[in-house]
Image (cartoon, rainbow over all chains, first blue to last red; front, side, top):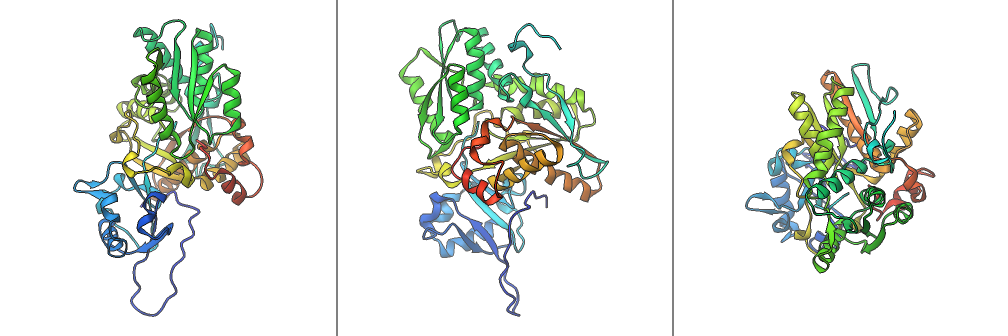
Length: 111
Length: 315
């Protein structure tokens, strides 16, 4: 997996001795924090981005529809896995690993 | 090197090796110094090309006013060229841009119309489109959708890079209007089999993403994702860190967006080393650091710089 991430601190949960649950940090843009009680980031799990989003939907109902539609990711939503745009990986089926950081952002103009 | 005028000197920028940042003798970084353009940024290429195309097409005639949404550099380039060619320039610019950009725009005679910080350049685009509708005498060149923008890079930036670095394997540049990556990338893909085209996109503070609705997002009309190999989102912290490293290790005093590009290029370089592949990675130095001195990016701790940049449009 290519990554340019060099500064992200990835805190892992303490080892409880049980089967380790996959933990993925998901950074939520301001515009979607109505679904997370204002939280800037939430945690979830899933072997793929699709599974992760489905997992989040169980605790943050309504958010899924704002990120995906029938075709996959919504046009003006960008999702990054460890800073890399998932549209250049495997899109909604991009595989995830424990400790990954997923960032959701609306598409904005530069220039 | 001698030119007929300042405008004729746009482009032809040097490419320099980055021996200290390059990870090995087989994986090398090369920087194209676009700060060596007349107004100090890569935008001179697109601005001049868009103006000349509009003249050819009969859209721009003497006395016209050019209206453009811009976070700074394109406006500065347009203002310089317009001054020499006899046009007026009105820039619609988000209010959260550095003071130096405003000073430079004023110096070259442009009028600034500020758009709200929330929403960043999206908002500037929206306001400019509205203003253009209200006054048909204003000519909007519209860098986000004007094919002359990417054509400038297809015709000049791309060929210059290939001539200086025929062994190129990767091209890394910033993603804003997408003009640099679309034009240069398309040219290089046509001439270099297997080349990788990598975008470094600035990840700003939260206010910049302060849209009212997620469907208000913006994708430049020029953007064609099939040109890109991949696309990285670079935080302001990583961009500042790399801007400082470029200064410290290679002596290059660049703007913050260049730091973001260096960050992505170093990621690409590390991957080439890991995969045991040779690489000649060309990256763009978009502009010099002068316009960003007041942002605090070059002094104090990284935390301080990151805080100071929060909410600023630094690319």
